[in-house]
Image (cartoon, rainbow, N blue to C red; front, top):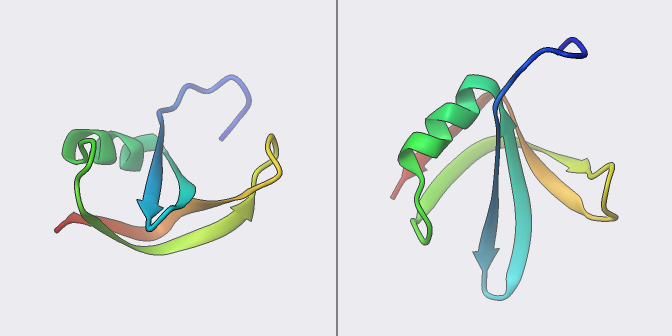
Length: 72
């Protein structure tokens, strides 16, 4: 993305048995997630990348081109 371009960002937190991780997606995939995911939904996600956050000292999951999300 070029500096100054507008885009959508969707951030969610996945929690399983006390473990929480941030999941981020950009662009039209963010719009898709916003339309289908609600608080406390059970979801299945595939093909995410693990990255170190630039702003906090934690790893996060980031959607890639071939990532997918489904409601369970």
